[in-house]
Length: 174
Length: 170
Image (tube, rainbow over all chains, first blue to last red; front, top):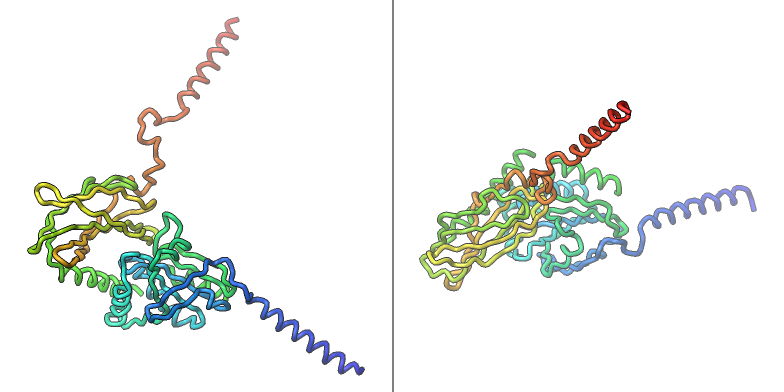
C-alpha cells in the first residue's frame, strides 16, 4: 500500500469521525423537558417531541394577560430572524376559548399588521401549565428547549430587554 | 419599539372597551374593602349591578399581576352573593406572592346569556406594605421588638461595670 493511499484513508476516517461527532450533538432521545400533546388552532395535533432536533420556544400565555401582549412583538422578531426555531404559544387561562384566542391573533393582524404566524393552542385540561408553571409563578413564561429536548432557559415575566435576552440565549445554542 | 408598545396598549384597551360596549348590564358603584389591600389580604368587593333583564348570577374574576416582574397569575373567580338592597358582594383572599395590583371583571348572567363586563379602570393598586413582602415582616408589627437584643448589650455592660467596680473596691 502506498503512502498516498494511507493518507487518503486516514483523511477519510478523520472526516467520518467529524461527521459522527456532529450528528452526536443531537440525541435521538427526548430530554428532560416535559413532553405534551397540543391541538393547534389550525386543528393539527402536535407533540412537543415531534420537534426533536430543533430549538423550541414555548410561550405560556393568556389573552387577558397584559404582559403577554407585550411578548408578542418579541416572538414576532424571533419568528422573523430565527426561522428554524419552533415557537409554540400555549394559552393557559382555562376560561379562555379557541375563538377568543383566534380573535386575539386576528386583532394583531388587523390593527398592527403583525402576523403571529407560529403555533397557537389551548391548554384545555391544564396539564401543560401544571408541568411548566410552578406554584406562585405566572405568565408570560418563555421556555427555551434545546435540540435534544432539554430545558435550556426559562424567562418568567415580560421585561423591556426580553428580545435581547431571548436572542442571546438562542445565539448560544444555535 | 416604543410606538409598537403604545399601539399594542391601545389595541389591548380597545379589546377591553369592545367588550364593555356590547354589555347590557350596568355596573354602578364598586366598593373595595380595604381600598388598598396588601399581599394575601382578605378583600370584600361590593358592586351595584343592574340590567333590564333579570340578573340570575354574577361571577367576579380576579387577576393578580406584578408590575415589577411583568407577571400575571392565573385569574380566579367567585360567584357573588346578592345582598338585601340588590348589591352583589364577594369575599376573597389575594393569593399571588408578588403582586402589585389586581384587575377584576364581572360575568353577568341574565336570562339566557352571559355578558362579560371589563373596564380599564377596574384595577386596584396594592398598598405600600405589599411591595416589601407582606407575610414576612412580622417583627415590624410588634412595637416590643423595635430593638431586638440591644437591651441585652446594655445589661452586659452594666454587669461588667459592676464587677469591675466591685473588684476595684476589694
